[in-house]
Length: 144
Image 1 (tube, rainbow, N blue to C red):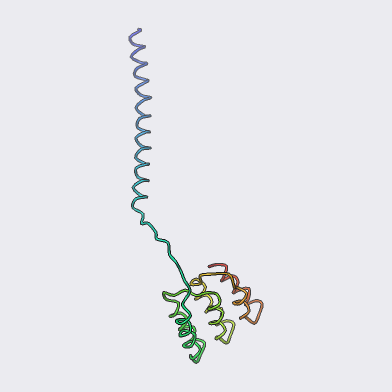
Image 2 (cartoon, rainbow, N blue to C red; image 1 turned 180 degrees about the horizontal axis):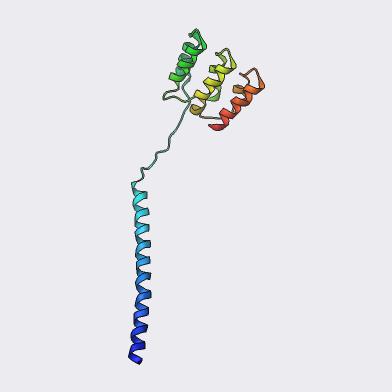
């Protein structure tokens, strides 16, 4: 009987130890997977965004100014946004070239994601005639 109790105790202890070791192994596997995932993720380099240089911006400004209709001006602005960033002052200057608030809103939606600063929102908002359009513009600027 004593031998049977000892055998039962050893068996119970073995049953308790095995699941614990399996849990420990599972946790180690999870940790290894996390480490592998971290190592696979590419390291992001910090991006230094700068507004378009004054010389380049003056060229864009002249081309937009010489375009005959707002639709063409917006298309030129769309092309100028490819690979370039703008300051809020530059954005305000481009918006001043457009005739109607709806077109200015459309242009702002194009430019806003490419703006690098948010210090001079008031200059941008002054370009809009109606308060409802100023509110739309502010929402666009806040999204970015």
